[in-house]
Amino acid sequence: MIQFKVKKLKSPKTGTLFYFPSIVQSGTLTLSEVASRIAKRSTMHTADIKAVLSALEQTVGDALTSGHSVRLGDLGSFRLTCITTHGEDDPKLVTAKQVKKLRVRFTPSGAMQQKLGTADARTRSVTFSKIATPEP
Image 1 (cartoon, rainbow, N blue to C red):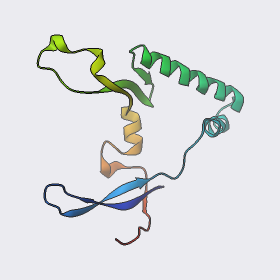
Image 2: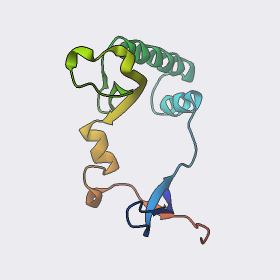
Image 3: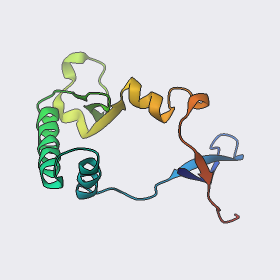
């Protein structure tokens, strides 16, 4: 079950307050916990899965820093994007020095989007639970 809380935001244009749902993370799974859960669903030992996941971590990192995107089947794909300092009027003036920060973007596959119901909110296979939030 996915929990959410109510967040409020003030419109910078009108000053009007409005409220919206915000997902509450229920925790984080470590590499060991992921490996243990996979081991329960397979014939492999946790140590073997941990080794494979560690190698995957290295391989994805190496591929991204080499300029590749990485597609992991029905999970999705990873790619690099960048934040730049400013734009130029002339394309000849654009240099790598304008890259301020690199970010890794994950894009879920169509199958993953369907599983989470992100493609269409009416076909979700997940349930939501509203948690109590303090009154303003």
